[in-house]
Image (cartoon, rainbow, N blue to C red; front, top):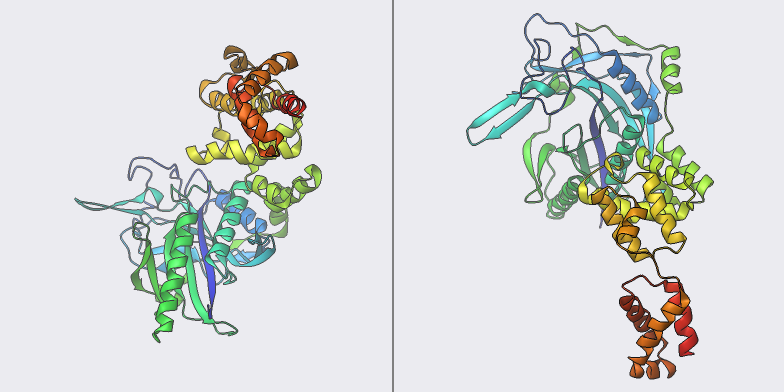
Length: 474
């Protein structure tokens, strides 16, 4: 490809406050339409905004997590535009004096290398309402209007859709770790706008950027960017120019559609919000917030790698979710090997979480119960296949592993004489395979082991089965 892809993201994250940015209305998701509203968040004449101090604290915590410089003074501004979900006719945001600037987020590339993505700014603003369209007309729900947001604007440092997805995932992981946002993309409290352009390889001049609005899943982000890169490539190859515009992603058709010509900053007619004083934060306040910060994903990854000798990949997967990491460390504290615990989490546990679209806090098997199941395998009381069956029973029945094994008679057969009888029966019933094995087709060992396991209903100890078969077959 003769073009270089240039991508930057503007991520909007709703803050986990109980009340809105400038009024006391609830931020609870799922309430009846227009039930969490008041004269302030619906823009009634004569109302005045009052800044939510908890939103400020969460925004500062977010900025510090992204290694930003927190400004001692920031200014709220009116961003003027007219849309049905913005009853005031303007959004209270921050413009030329934002809360924080000059941050860094480190991401892992496909080859395992690390890359630093610059964070231009982190600023506070209020969310708009939500437009709802159906066959009968269009409606506006103002419950979301005024919900506190942080906007995290990246530098145009990403060079592929995959890098953009890695950045968005890392950003979400950090927000979840510091507990400033719910990060629920399906509920719309974490979404991003992507800016993408192409330039000739080796050039230092960026191409004309196109913005793709309101992407609320990693899959949609990658698909939208991939489509847009292809679209722009075809236009440039045909000698055409790229128009600066805002586009929407059609997830059904897998393509982007023009929404409007891109506005410039002066189109919004920014000016300082006259009803809000400058936000002044002294160093003592910033340090107080910094001292309350939890362990961040990068630090957690390094600790897991050092303390438990995990690979970089395993440590990154586990550290990406603070609750998953806590579950993992509970498993290890219950006497399990670190690598074995990691394997179970990344295979069985995460498989279930992905299928059910749940977080680890909703997982029905406690770390103590899972450790008891894994210990049964380690002690040779059940084999790996039986353990998976027991695991599935535990997911649905609520019983512990010992109970299930006892109730269903799943204990592994350890008695060598009992296993030897089954082995003798299998050998006697397979004279042709025995001859082939002795003639050099040693890969038939799998046939014999499988037959013994089948006759024992999966309960024979595989190690003992292998040892007896090798002895008898020579």
